Length: 383
Image (cartoon, rainbow, N blue to C red):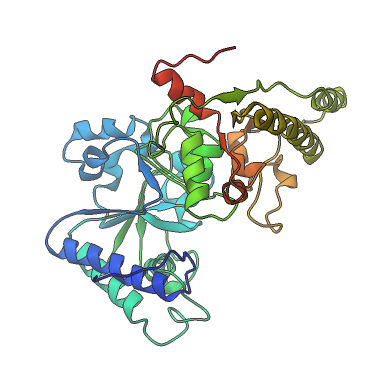
């Protein structure tokens, strides 16, 4: 085969290096043929056709983004390249625009390249730089770079520095264009329409903002960050359709979630003191109660020979990738996301349990969204 890879997602693996060379090369090759390219990671779910928005051929195309001022495709029409971001606030992104994205991490998992002279030249240089990094600390380890995304970030930022990006002189607030290195015009894809995993799965910002995203990228997953954890996030959101139907005659046990009395008591105490219940004390109390209920439910399901359906638990505190991410000063929300005021929120499984550990142990279970799929097929649960 032309491309042979192993399952490793480590950026310093030989397989990843080959993969990065391959995909940047394919983007460059197709752009040089005169086609616009929407480059998408495999952990992206497309919810609707983005073509009218990306191509933006007429004034009516502005409505494809939902009509919000910060989500009009005409604001991106002059971009040679447009990229998504890992920033935390879709609301701030709509209000501030590309200037908000400039200060964060650009994510090439959702990347649009037009076959303009500048776009074509950039795609070619991106592939060449990934394949054969020039000498010097700008692109070479240990200073940089372990992925094609990091190479992209260094290339577009003026001088390779940070932030190295700024809106053009006189650009309106909420504009979506940035002056990039060289003669490239860089666009910032609206975060509310091209969502990262935290914005969609945890904040559910699309519901609060009343927008219909084009895509959701399964970033900010926990556990192993690999395929199983990402698939579980999609599954819980009703966006996963790759599971086989349940075996004929399979029987299930579901238990209704209700707030544990000890959690209600703690919340009432904080309310009496005029304090928010969005804190680690309430959250840990809730987790302890959930795990105790789960233990009993698992034992009952095993005794009855049934597959357990997990409930939709409520989280009172976000969960971070690392201890260095201080959420306690931000209302138990991921720093930068607190304007969404999303706590409490329905817990993803990986906020409480390890999907990878459950899969390895062979613990049969279904998530709460499975009941929704039964309803779609006209199957009614027995009380």
